[in-house]
Structures are given as structure tokens and as C-alpha cells.
Length: 173
Image 1 (cartoon, helix red, strand yellow):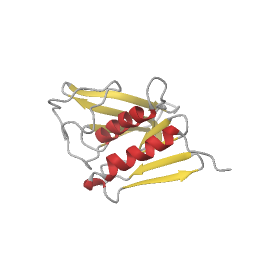
Image 2 (cartoon, rainbow, N blue to C red):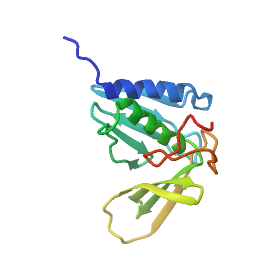
Image 3 (cartoon, rainbow, N blue to C red):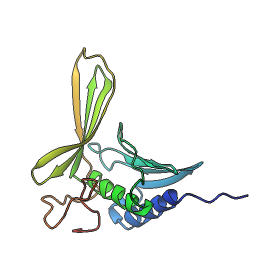
Image 4 (cartoon, helix red, strand yellow):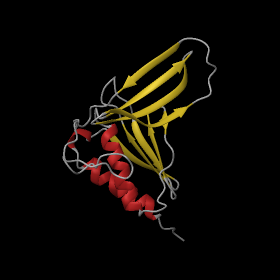
């Protein structure tokens, strides 16, 4: 007996095709694959100073990623799967442009932290940080990466932040 796919998986796949498939600068850079009851999105970096962006969508939530950063799950608790996916792709829009950056901190060549920062009219703001337990000895090395798949929308005139703290994909180019 065939099982039906969950609403979240279907909404995620539909949103990926809508947002990424309709953007010529992303042609050939993204892929969507299936593994059991997961959909895995991967968007390649377009340059040496960029980072890979993606997500793993399960039947119960989205797990975002950017380079070595693994974010907290996004779950459709008080919203529809479609609204959650639209909000996630608003976030992806920022990650694929110079309006976001990824700060990676290494200690003795081991990942100590990965921080996603988003640009706002008043400067850079931390969106989320991933910390690893690393002894605070040895040389510290920081790398800041930014993507340039899509153009910046700074200073964000006519755009309003969504409830997730990101600017919408479709409004204002």
C-alpha cells in the first residue's frame, strides 16, 4: 500500500521549485533530492568567498543549513506548511545575496562557532549561532563568507520584516 507524502514535504518541494526554479541566476546551482521521508535541498556556492545553503525537510520540520552552520528546526506549529516554507525561502533569499554573511570561527583548525548574520538598515544582526565545544587554547582564525547569487536589496526601502525576522523574497525584487 502506497503512503502519501506529508503536507510539509509537498509544500517544501513546491516552494523550492517556485522560488529557485523561477530565478535564472540559480539555474544549475540547486538540487532537490529525496531520501526516505526527507527532501534535501542543496544550493552550491557560486564563488570561493561564498557558502553552500540548504535544508533537510522532514515530515515534521525544516532543518536549515549554511556551510558548517546547522540551524534550529523550523516547525509549522502555529502556521500552515505553505506559510512556513514561504518564510524559509525568504530566509534563503537573504542567504543567497550580500544581505547575509556567515562568520566561521576556528580554534586550532577545529570549528568553534558558525554565525549567520543578516543585514538590516541599521547594520548587521546575528540571526543564529552554532557553537561547538572546543578548548580555548591555540590560535583563533575567523573567516567571513558571503554569497552573491542574487543582488542585494539594501537599504530595504518598501520592505517590511516578516515574523521570522527576514525580508520577503517576492516583494521589492
